[in-house]
Length: 582
Ligand code: SAT
Ligand code: MN
Image (cartoon, rainbow, N blue to C red; front, side, top):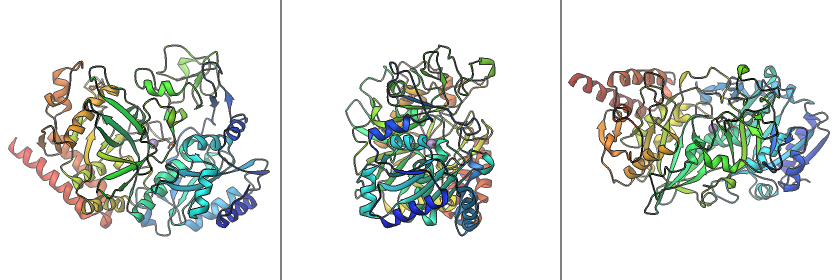
């Protein structure tokens, strides 16, 4: 196969000349092609009776998570990348990469994968072509994106596409780089076969290059799930929520209402990424650029996410989980049984660690989710009523609060922090600043990114309301104080009611908060004083948190938008006056 797009044809020829593959395969996205990919040596079929069309992949043990210190933004001017990114000069990066890519596909098949991020034909969708030598990547791209001839047709009609080059290289972390050239709409990744490093449509295109392009074109590319909350009156409100990797975005997107909240339905639009733009009505409209879920397996079980369990029994890929005696995928939190093998393929021994790698993953088509929204493929997207920011905070952050207006909401997002998780190769459980949950994914200077967010205030008076939630608060004994999972709907209910002006709130220095009696606790087992604690503001500790945020903002120097510094000063002044009167 080939293409009528000369730029694409030339690029494929040039890459083949450099990487020297044994053969070139243009992916058409067909089922037959997928069947061939999953029959390659990258995969092992799982039990066909319990898990028809499911395949298992084990990655190199040194290649199981995103490697942020090897991820670079390569702009001519380092200021464009900002202190939030690792930067490399494009010429230097290209020289390094040329040497690493030279001959790297010898003996391998080079897959050319035209893909579309977003529903085919949506004005919000964007196109790309990934070249890779990994059948695992090609198979995953088929699930995660609209991939193949359909996407190629649009690329040929429109001419625009992101060039995304990937090779496993020799999988050595010493020769691993994930480089982004936003000025050239190009991504080059070598040395890793792991999801976020290798499925280039996802974090690399949809977030890092996406956020860059979104600023140029006036929209938003965000690390957010999209969920529809249908109330007993039959009205659906869409919420977009940003949480860092492995903090429960997938679970929230697929939430099952508790039995004590009859009449509620929850609709899943997306679990990881939202692309949003202003509609003619002044509201923000969002699409999910992805077509599948690449979710964290451990902790996904019948109690925490029954919708996910129901969609994972067919037509899915499992990476780095454990295996039962009869060849079913298994991970901690799925069931009480004991697996036979761990993720490395050795006999499972609980003394030697978990059976499933903590960042092990499933890949599955979105459509298989029982709560898949009928509006997921709407070309104009869904209208967003609320934006929710959240982190994993054992202390300080209340269960929920609402920003006073859009600009304050930008501060709430920019001030986010969260305990780190296994989704990246670094220490786990350390509180780090993670504005808008985009720390690993913002493709340009955060100061400019916040300025871009702030710019929306002038463009519309129908923007979503902004909230912050924390499901992860712990008591002095380290026990979670809020039950989480399905019960989070109680908080979403308050959020939606706020959007409809149906419930009052307490005005505090950090934002508007519910009184304990404003949260629906019908049928919920929670101590009265827990809810009181979850909904209180610790003024002294918040002052010190604001001090940390101020210090963090100082790293961005003169590029910091004054409006955001003013918002911060307002909150500090309000906290201080509270201390003075106390
Ligand atoms: O590996 S991914 O980056 O795709 C998943 C995540 O960390 O959010
Ligand atoms: Mn993510």
